[in-house]
Length: 395
Image (cartoon, rainbow, N blue to C red; front, top):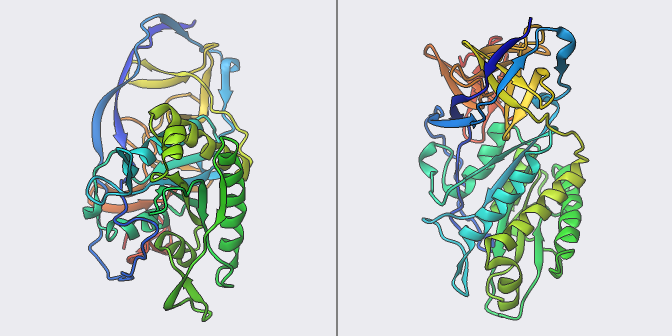
């Protein structure tokens, strides 16, 4: 017999993403390379009541296992991307024609993430979702924290979003800051330039002039192979951490035409963000769709139902976050979980897959961007090296 229930469900949503911002314009050198050790910081999760469904129509929960759908998605096989909207209200960006760089790039980031969240083979994190500066989270100053956040997540790519400025108000167009061919961690040069070509082409399709690549070298600072380091902090630390990291300058805030065509409304900024998403989709060959559905509460148990009233089992990506449903019962799992020989921790209150530092019964664990706990190894987050045992506990 099929059970009938209401699918109104309120869950306490757990925010698992740390936020950071820049403290300098991309065109200004970051002369501080201080890698001094700071105190370890455990993520504080912000809980807020968020409704996942307000539809009160009665639905039937199927008991026939033939009505179950096994998801083929997994955070383990998804690319981990960090979007970094540059600057914040404390460390302001460029100004022009009444516009603020930190506001523009935040809208670009939101649109980019919203589009990418519809794909099941990518997980997207952002360094900030507001204009607040959170440099006190223990990953160094605002600028270096962005790369260290990517390092802690073990990200596949870091994309920093900016708007250019110049005293010459006639300068216009998009510019890409990528790693030059230093010979050190050479794949970073190849990957950042390969992505950059795609990104410039897509922005050009909106009408932006392609200004090409800007690659600078730092005087007096050298990689281990003796080559001079890249000039820009985001790019340079990407090479050092072996995580491809680029800066996209989406035109000039000091150019009246660029402002009018691309920056002066939220809708125009969203178009830029969607083009950035297209570039990421193209570069990584993303093609998996998320499974559309809704969370359904049956007593103390939570399920995920498709529009055809099928119960989904396995991994589900919903609103950019990952959840796991038992492959036999279809019930949402919480707490510690082992899947494909990898350990995860799912929020006890919401089921959301957690990343970053996690404290459970006094023990500390670290989950990378794909959700898997760091186990039986040493791990360096750009500031400090930690040791973890086979269960994932920090030693």
